[in-house]
Amino acid sequence: MPNMVDYEKTYREFRHQVPEYFNFARDTFDVWAQDPNKLAMLWVDDFGNERRFTFKQFSELSKQTANFFNSLGVKQGDRILVILPRLPEWWVIYLAAIRAGIIFIPGTTQLTSKDIKYRVETAETVMVITDEDNAAKVEEIKGELPVLKHLVIVGKREGWLSLNEEIAKFSPEYEAANTKSDDPAIIFFTSGTTGYPKMAVHTHASYPIGHYITGKYWLDLTPDDLHWNMSDTGWAKAAWSSFFGPWICGAAIFVHHSVGKFDAKKTLELLAKYPITTFCGPPTAYRVFVLEDLKKYKFPHLRHCVAAGEPLNPEVIKVWKEATGLTIRDGYGQTETCVLVANFPCFEVKPGSMGKPAPGYYVSIIDDEGNELPPGKEGNIAIKVKPERPVGLFKEYWKNPDKTAEVFRGDWYLTGDRAIKDEDGYFWFVGRADDVILAAGYRIGPFEVESALVEHPAVAEAAVVASPDEIRGEIVKAFVVLAPGYSPSEELVKELQEHVKKVTAPYKYPREIEFIDALPKTVSGKIRRVELREREWAKKLGKKK
Ligand code: ATP
Ligand code: MG
Image (cartoon, rainbow, N blue to C red; front, side, top):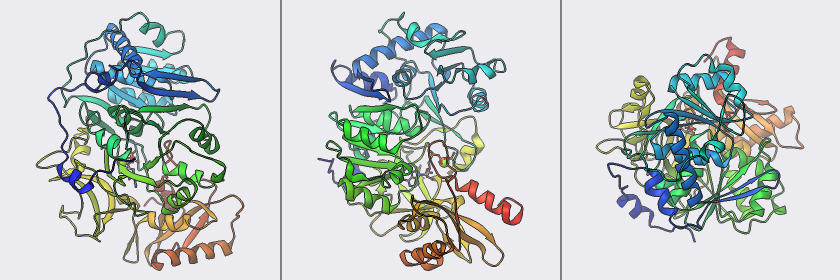
């Protein structure tokens, strides 16, 4: 049974308890580890290998690792960059860093030498930990980085300390650093959907305590669940749903270490094969799942599905529900925050809406002057930070007071996203502020038009952007990836335009449609509308928007 709490009451009454000192490894994780048999992770790879880890094993491995880090002179407040695929060591290092008060910075394995250099330099990291596949990229730039003192590898390589060989030399006893709740604990790079990634600093409370809401109320986790979150280790989403969310609740996590690219069939097979009870995938993955023959699969253990990271098209919710009986519950948040707005299991989903505010946050729609807007009016999604700052909010952008000041305005934290709240308190995502189209005096959010297009059987994916137009200022232009079996034609353009006019307000229909093989995306699979927009403006006007 899902957690059928009374939403209104929980929302009104919920308060996090934040002590002055808090260390997640000691104060949360090790409490679950008191049960020596409690499963923390079921790990599988593409070659049929399976490994199981208990909370106790992770606790001890992380203590050995913390001892090893300290022996190198890496200490509380230092920063380390960890670039690993989904290997169990990633979780061990994460816990060890928190335990020792060392600031953990995750990076995706798709980082280039240049990206790594930028990260090491700006965050002044004293150690990089990576695997054999990525070590050469670090070696290429190591000579230019005097701040980088230690190279540690999962595996073996000359010039590198082998993590597993080293930690075997250390004791599984460790007294955790007595970290203050407000001390920095993790630095995340944002996804870089709109531009260069920003470095968001989280504290020993903001994610480690704030994600209680994510785990308990949105992911709906209990100590008996096995939760699978697909996201790459490099992003904040892994901290949400593969680390803090589940482990705060004592749930076990399922990890699939894949060597190749995302494979929808393989993912569905794993979901059918293992006793996974709750699942979190990005909308981009669900959009591919619904193109598969879902009738072929049975998911006997699965009871709850969520999505986050991008808006989730209603059509995808519908098809998934028809096939599995389960409603995908969309959740909205950012690297800078825990879950802010979501479709919690205790209330009905309105397909296409992100749901209602998470307990612990006052979320509102405000105009550019900071005034709250009534239901039905589009505005900025903002979080109230005065008189009380919500626990799950990041501390600041790393060494970037200007950027930090841009998003904290008066009583509010501005997300940079636009939405509408309806009379029932549900939030409807319109788009990132920069993605909203201004056509002949109308404001048009890309998401609604994209969702209308995706409802058509010929459309696998769509991205809608502003294209310059002499008369209207901007027009709606859609880039469409066709579903298998369809090919581009003038008739199809007309058909899609008519379809959009029918399912949404006619003025929103795309006056131009271009068929494209694939949409530009971030490493984490988010559509980069900014790229399409810039291409479009350069093509038509010879300049950027
Ligand atoms: P950058 O800030 O570097 O441009 P990013 O904003 O994509 O990248 P993230 O912090 O990973 O980096 O993503 C948060 C953003 O993703 C939100 O601000 C919002 O625009 C979008 N988003 C996340 N979840 C949802 C959702 N459920 N519905 C709509 N949009 C979402
Ligand atoms: Mg962002």
